[in-house]
View 1 (tube, one colour):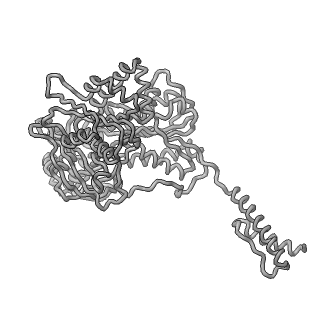
View 2 (cartoon, helix red, strand yellow):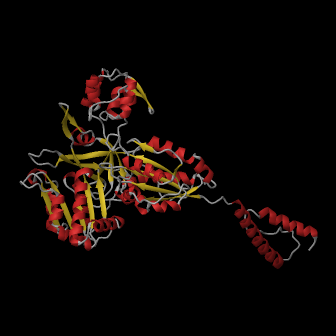
Length: 584
């Protein structure tokens, strides 16, 4: 083979080395048909090998592992964690997301970069899927954590609660005590958390610990199978109210409304499952807005600035701002050191009388937030609709009648047919089991019945063979038996195999759902031994805590074990997702 020919062949190979494509010699090459076919195959093979070798040298450095752990009761922390994972991929990290309960403090030694996002609920309690980790972390004999573990903690909370972000703050402090290295300051976010989380996220990935450890940054087009939701907290779907009807009987001290909302036009982005929640954007009461304007000496026509632009004070107070909550930020902005406990915005303006211009007043107020309600319907039974069970909030304070924002707006200020901004909040940790043969125990007094109406509709529509046991109660059977007709129909049809009703004011003995759990403890434990799933919905600080204690007592008594054994049994139920709570 001549030197010139070798040079020509080499140039052909070089020209195609980066492509690995099929190579064909020019028509004028001095070879017969058989030789041309053989050489074309040879050169294509050489080109493919060369392309692979070139690609190998161009591969990015491997991404750096990042562990993201979350504790979430309502789902917000899980949403934040998923966003962190996506962002991490663009910064050279390969992140994995897990619940806090999936690890022990000792397991943290296996990681070098750790981010924790955790909420707090009830009386400063950790979420259910973080409780085991939290208890182990706070224990006196908790394992030491190497200084090589770089971490940062983000808490999601609500400053109107006494134990604001207690759980996340505790975790941050304890990790440092055990030896881990905080790479970025702890942050405790309030109800409107998006901006603070974004600032924390940017800060974390700009720290020396993360910058030095990052692998080659991936592109933002990292493959993902998760579709971005069209309708979210910040971009709600405008649904229409179908109906609001009173469920409470004559003589009840409460007013509980059944709310039906049409999701027509929302498409698959408004699909939901039994166990999910619905976020609802309310409007403030115009009369309350007028009272606040008068107390502050405002006309309501003052133009004030917000991040979204300028608007009149009255419009902002009615549509965008929390006109009730007073927290430390409010007092600081208004030049006040403190205010009496439980004072609302009106009380501060009316009694403490700070001299405020409209802009300063607005700067101290929190943003109005959506309310989350447990969905009370199965989409299988009510396609294109979503139902809620909403108790109106009414109380007296400081010689003045007070009321809830969203509950009274849905109950009596929003006319049927009018629009309401809503979005679906997916529940990863509170959903009816897919095992239709499994027994199910549902415990939900008062408006806690909401998700169990959805569960029973779902089991009915799926023709599930598993037994269903409902614990429900309130003050009086005659006036507070929510969904009485539907529950009776389920009893008659066999969908509800057992119903335990607790009416706390009908007899001298105060009977609550936790009372009946202990009274019927032997059968309750027998259901657990047969693989029953327990679901609890309602008040976190009282009912849910008392029910939890009652179940542990039943396990100890009828499982012939001690307190430690009962706790182990409960931990197993939690790990198997057979103990799920929707509490607030």
